Length: 353
Ligand code: UD1
Image (cartoon, rainbow, N blue to C red; front, side, top):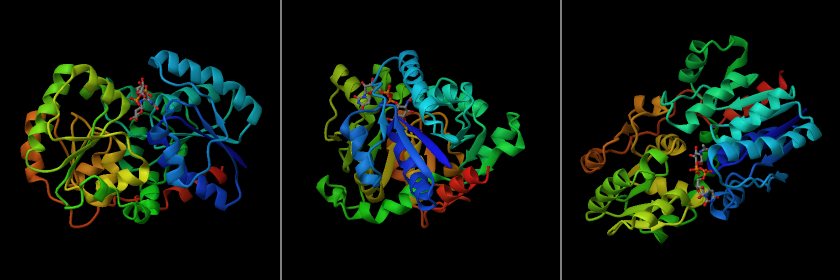
């Protein structure tokens, strides 16, 4: 069997790594195609090094552009690769533009598509990721889900029962594999997060950072927090551009360049509280037992709320009280299938078809 993996943006890489390892362990032939949606070392290559997977076999070099141009470039450049490689399965991950673009091309040339992280929904169609998820799940032949909620969502949307396979959460596989190495990086000490008091922040969603008025209110809230405790904020390039343009005073908030996978894991593990709008970090903090405050109206990971690890705090003015009230979980949250074996089930499922 030959599988061709498509990845493109930072959150894809930790999902690829465990599936790649599980497939290699059983002798499956594999090709990794990177679309080049993310291209900075800190957003891309650093992750391949940290995750211990070799560099992509093919990089399409699409880079940044509007949604339409980026999606179109990926489609145009991936088609000849798929025609040339003729894989038994095209495996796509998560919800980024690369995921949707590749799935659309593959199904139209008659290649089978498996979607890792199928059925995840925020029910907020203003998020580009939500559109990508819906499109990919309609098109894919095999829907590999991370949770029972996702199974139920796909059934309710009319997906055939035979296409839905519950495998669990591959992000948790990656985390369990790497967490001890992450703790050895010493990153928490280098950035002053060692006392278990730090608030770690990541924000990059257009809904938070593209509106200068909202961004200013968020920065106000973070600046107040930083008067009492360390606030450490690795900044996504999109957010950095918006912060620079708005010339906001961040006070004692410690801004860092984007950090790699292991450093970020160490930072979250060391945090008293995580403040984020990321999807993946909601899962990772829950799996580590670190309380998460999600600065959004909706989440695609309701199980992190159900287990008490996560809370939605869309209003910046409410952040201070929410941080003060947040408590570390006595035990990390491990919903069904968040057990380190999801990638093995992904590969079993691909092989059995
Ligand atoms: C993308 C994903 C989002 C994911 C995020 C993680 C989509 C629709 N969105 O959003 O789901 O949570 O990745 O990072 O696919 N840039 C760089 N260097 C890079 C990459 C991007 O400087 O290596 C800058 C560019 O200015 C670019 C901007 O970041 O225009 C946005 O990049 P893009 O890939 O369009 O979307 P993200 O916001 O990163």
